[in-house]
Structure formats: structure tokens, C-alpha cells
Length: 391
Image (cartoon, rainbow, N blue to C red; front, side, top):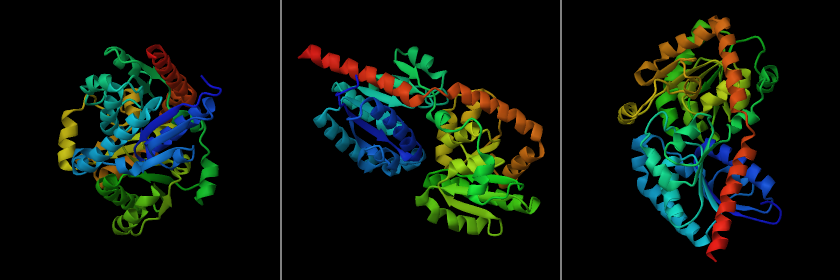
């Protein structure tokens, strides 16, 4: 399956996290097929791997049900155009990376026309909207799962699935370089450092950042020596800076473009929005306070469809409230500040959570790029054999 074969791979990845995952996956595929071509919707990490981005990944960065409805016409138009183009070009395989609400509809259309489809990153069917399994069965030939308990959920519906580990577990070191990261960021080695991560989407910043920054102000009064570091997506810096000036004008907040992994390695605790970043924080073995806020309507809809008591990925994976979760009205600045101080004041609990996160890291480390490309290669091979038989 390697050698001179040069498959055409189509991909769609939404948002920063999808671009990161797809970039790692493309690296694994290129190692197998150096002459492969890839195109679709993606971001800079994918482009760095030779990907031809017909649309930028930011187009898919919508947030919650209400935001999705506002952008429905534009997204629907892009999906229609992309589907037309892919059916005309007939790629060897289509890989949808995350962005399930966009990708599953596109995958279903392609699969119905005989294009092999793979979805990378199982949606959280174990947390909410489990009824999507029927839709997934019509959409994808193979699901690539990042968590070990997911394949059996798909097997129950006859959907082929493979646990490929989590790529972040491969890239994040088992022992985080705390001192080196602090020096790189210009942070003192002996002061408490809080990483403030309110999300990577505009609507997350809008709903979550004010409470986080008000908590920072409270903490700066209670711990004058504390340092605060806030990595943000470069395109959101102009949105974040006025909020810092408004809600934490006198706190020592260092706003950085990107560099979130350095910040997580350097910090003692992180105040963090629920999402992929919480898993990154766990892999960096950092205690955290997870918080989330949505618009009122999105929250009511989400709340009705939840299956589990946990929302944060570290808690879901460990099936325990290992770290506190403060959702919607519970995410007050006072509560968030109290939770952060609790970690700083209880080093034995910090040690315990680091041990649990280390075990989690080992469980998720599987050389994802190789495992995923093995599974995709099998799908492509099946597709080629099918074509040969029909000719």
C-alpha cells in the first residue's frame, strides 16, 4: 500500500483543535504515501503538510446551537459546493476530522455515491446526543476513536471503529518541562502561576472570559505574588485585550499569542474552559478548575441531552470528579477563585491528581498517527479492490 501509490485524500477539519489533529494525521499518511495529495477545508498545520485548503478552517468555528443557526445558510452552501467538487474528483478516501454537524452530512452524501469515508474523533455520543449513532452508521465506513471505551459503543450498532489513542498523548512529554517553560516565558521560578484559558472561539471568549478575569482580580488581591498567563488564539487577541483592561486592570496578566503548551507546562494550576484544552492540561499533569458558560438557550438544550454527570474530559475519562467543574450559573468569579486557591493550599491533592493524570497519559499514548494511517490504509485498500472487481 505504500511505494508508488499516490492516493487522493480529501479532508475537512474545523477550528484550531481540528487543524492540529488533522496535521498530525497528515504526517502519518505522508510517511506511508509520500506522493499523496490532500485537499478540502483546513488550517495552517494542515497546509504545512502540503494540504490544499479550498476554504479556511475558521469557516466552521461556530459555537452552540444558536450560533450554528445564524450561520446555517453559509455553511450549507459551502458543504454543497465541497460535496459537488469531491464527487467530481472522486478521492480515494474522505476523512472528516471532528466538526460532526458539518462532516456527517457531507460524509453521508459521499458514502452514498461510493466514496470511502472515515471520521476521526468520535463525537461525544457517550455524553449526549447518542441518537446520532444511526446517522453515523449512514455517514462513515470507519470511526477512529481517541478513547479506549468508544469502539464497543459503535460495535453495538455494527459500525467499524478503531481505538487509535490520542495524538496529544504522543506529542506532550510525560514529564512537563516546568522550569524551562517558565524561563522561556519570563516567569519567576518561585511564584505561583495560574494559566487562564477561556477558550479558542469568539463566543467562548464572550461568555467565559469576563468571569475568568474577575476571578483573576480576586486572586491578585488575595495572592499579590501570583502571576497570570493567558494564551489566546492570535485572531482573538484584539477581542481579549479590552476584556483584560475592563475586568482585571490591575492584575499581572500576561497575554500571549498561542504558546498554550508552554503555559500549561509552566503553571501550577489552570482555570480552563471545558473542551480539548482540559485534556491537554491533564496530559501536562496540571490541576485545574473547569468552567463553561453558554447562551441561555444553548445551555437549556445541552442540559436536556446530557447522559453523564461529568462534562470535562479528564473527569469523563477517569469517571470521577477528579477536578471541579463549574457550569453556567455556578461559574461565578468568587467560586472560581476559591477553587484555584484550594489547589494551591492542598499540595497532597495536587500530587494525587498528577498520579491519576500520569496513568491516563499512558493509557492514551498509542502512536496515533501510525495507528490511524494503518486503519485508513485498510479502508483505501478495500475501496481499490472494490473498484477493481467492478471493472
